[in-house]
Length: 208
Image (cartoon, rainbow, N blue to C red):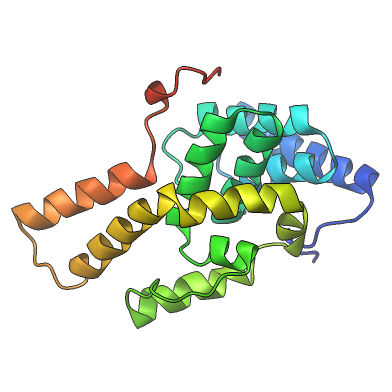
């Protein structure tokens, strides 16, 4: 059986896959009253639109995802493509937000994209190994879409304003490895959750 991460090169085949995923999700919603989607098709639709060069379709798909799955933590590879779609659509505030969320979903993904080392990103052997293993599941096409100008933009943010966010995130994660249950642990967990999920109401240019 073909893996969902095996992306066809032919735009017609990409579109056919998009339509198949969309029909299946619509069928689930119609028959079950909700989305089951245990395979995670919803995470691939936006990136596939972007891969076939349909920026408007990608933007619509990511907005659909936000509306239909507001509590879904998403997928790092999906968020990487979401970032790129917002940047190419010149929705820069949203692009910055998605770049930050991508960075916090998987600490090693942006360094992989930008050709940077992983120094200082470690938290614990178990969590580090899980996130590193996930990188192998991200289609190489998601990385290959970024051009030089887009990589420079992301690299500037990663080394600049996002560095403080990243340092605090890693600090909290390290503390939580040993912090017992209690008020302080709850505060740290709440802070961590707030960092990972932005409040879209803070972004007046968001248009669902």
